[in-house]
Image 1 (cartoon, rainbow, N blue to C red):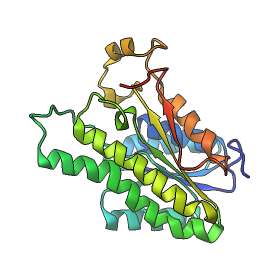
Image 2: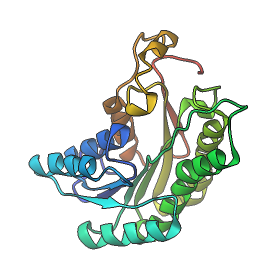
Image 3: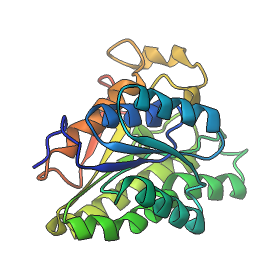
Image 4: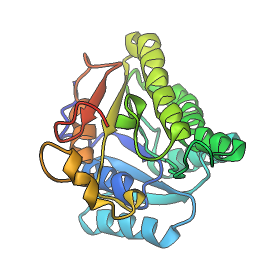
Length: 245
C-alpha cells in the first residue's frame, strides 16, 4: 500500500486544475512526491503558475490544455501527459461548470453543457487512463462531487443531476475495478470558498462550523483516500457539519 505522503513513484492528472480546488489538489499531490499534470481549458497563465510553484518546490509538473468534455481532446491530453511524465495512475476528475439557473430559466443547452463538463468528462478521462492503471495493477481515481448530489444546492437542478451522476459513476467503476488494484472514490465538498461560489460568504450561516471550507481542505481529503486500498466506492462529505444543503 502506498501512503498518502509518499507518491514519488506515481503520475497524477488533475483536471480543471488552474485554480480553486483543482490547483490545491495538484499542489498537495506534488508535495507528496507525485509528478502532476495540471489540466486547464482557458486559463493558461493560472495553470502555468501552478506548475511554476510545483517546480520551485522541487517537483515535476506540466500544464496541458484540453477540453475534457471532448473525447479527442482527452485522448490527446492523456497521450501528452504519458509522454512527458509517464503512465498516469492517479486521476482526479475535478473539472466542473457551475451555471446558476432557476428552474424556469434553465435551457436544454445549459443542461447538456453541464452534464458534458461535470459528468461525461469524468467518464472520458477514466476510460482513457484505465489501460495504464491496469498495466501497473494499481490506480487511484477520485471524483470531485458536491453536496448538491444529495441536497437542493444553490446552483440548479442541472448541477444536482451532474453531481449525482458522478457519484453513481464512482460506485459503478469501483465495484468493477477493485480486483484490478484500482480504487474509485468521490469527495463531495459543500460551500467551499472559491471563485465558483462568487463571493457568497453569506452562505456560511448555513454551516454549523460557522465558516466556508477552503480548497486546501478538499485537497487534504483527496490525498487521504489515495493510500487506502480497502476504501472504494465511497463518497466523503466535506461540509462543516451540514446534514444537507
